[in-house]
Image 1 (cartoon, rainbow, N blue to C red):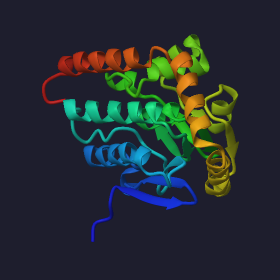
Image 2 (spheres, rainbow, N blue to C red):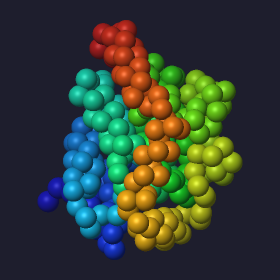
Image 3 (cartoon, helix red, strand yellow):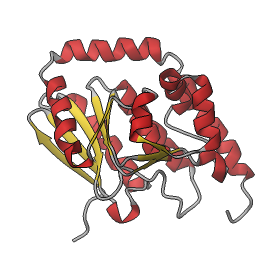
Image 4 (cartoon, rainbow, N blue to C red):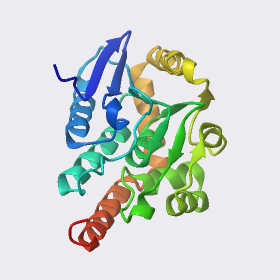
Length: 237
């Protein structure tokens, strides 16, 4: 029996969505992205869901897009649609990250409302080094969180950084021992679930409307840049 690429559990108002391609370090393919998008789009209509927690199974949160095949237009659409669904979601999204958190996987965490990182998290943005462009609205979220200068350095240099650096730079709420990640991230979710959902939805909407007022443009510009770079790739790449 083939395991699903996304696992979904609902416990006390917390919908946990687990990326489940551990043999691929949860690299994103179309099946995984489509399943995640479907769950995100269904959650607003389920009154039992108060908070969404995004996590990864195995040794990594997410190793980015699966590069075993060249990127396609559908790849781009799904990655961007997931990012928009997280940012525009009326319910708070908590990302619990550990191990490799790379490329599009990291970009999705920047779309989340709260990030809890295990102390073994290893984060990097390798896109520039492999000739592709970032996605997930990162050109809006990362400068808003870390500042424009640091965002440029992170994207262009692609240097690996730690959970502690992520906290210091404002990219994560807190760093915890890896064996406490599930417990602590669930506790954060339960605190959010205890709040009035209408109040939480207004906070999220207004904060993102002001703090990420160029998010929609970022998605559009990233998609255009991605298409241009893909067209410029050598045939057979």
